[in-house]
Length: 139
Image 1 (cartoon, rainbow, N blue to C red):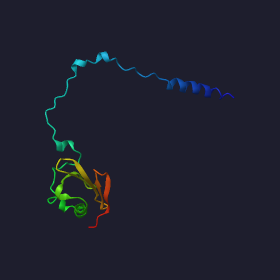
Image 2: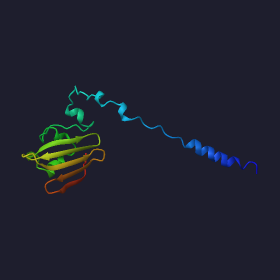
Image 3: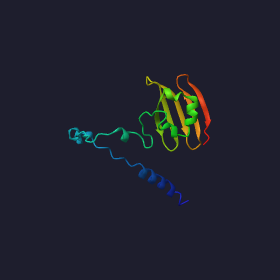
Image 4: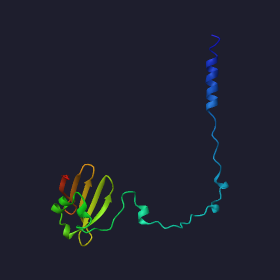
């Protein structure tokens, strides 16, 4: 019975120690707004610095130059009139390649998505909003 007094004393002690008041933040009057100067941008950033790594935009490509080297070229040639369109490689990273095809007026009419690891290709007609080809590409 003599030891029961320790529990209430410990409880009061723990409550008193755990209820410390936090230090109030200093008033904003101590900080002078006039002393903050805007940063001067001395370097100009280029488009290559702004684009994420591996997703660099390339200029439009004619169908017979760089596009014919790709694995999906044969299927693209079967499903899209490549001689009437200009191709623009939107993304070409180790995982996938996305190519947009534009007509003479600059309107995007076809899109191809090629997953390199799986050799999987999708060809989409953007005007009719339909899938022209979906499947694997044989090497």
